[in-house]
Image (cartoon, rainbow, N blue to C red; front, top):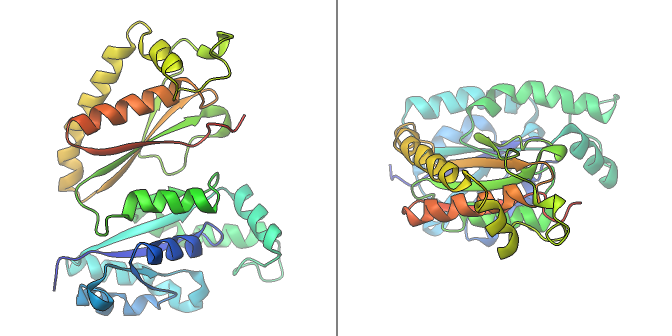
Length: 285
């Protein structure tokens, strides 16, 4: 068996599996859609996709009773020390309901009940799988193009090499990202929102960035946090975790969290760590 990794892609219906599958195909991956989970071990053991491509396998509740075999299939992969990564796409119930209503399609587990009932059944069915995932992506506030961009950032180079860190800014008033591995609260920093000339700007501008990073104690705080993250990386590698989301929040996700996320990503990258900043709520107000 080769050391090539296989992506096992699953998650909530309506969370964007089709978009992710198409994005992976556009990146050169070979994608197998709606595979019965019992066939996973045999497929992964091949260790390579068509024509030597990296490949991904989409497994979801459309498989009916076959999907119930997913937990056992993943356990077999672990026991065989197979090289795979489990990717879970998630979204809030509200976002999922809106998507099903906009397409006028029923939820696969809805039956004669409401959409929310189908979502609740699926969450219960996927609870154990969600807890075991290597990469979780919250698509609640991502449109199709933003989700495609996120997939390109994570998987654009083919097989995941080393640890990749996404430093994600957000606004607490919009909720904490569900795919957070670590959450950093920077609401203790003076808010540029109360400075009239800075209010319309974002943390991506030099004026706001200098104001935020120049506040008392902030520079030392960021350096200490980067040092903490760096000290955790060997443990993540030992445990096989190759994708980490650090969520950095302020009230609205426009000024402080954006500037801090950019600086954390910059310092991590300067230390030879693959890190990049993304901003969930910029432009949302």
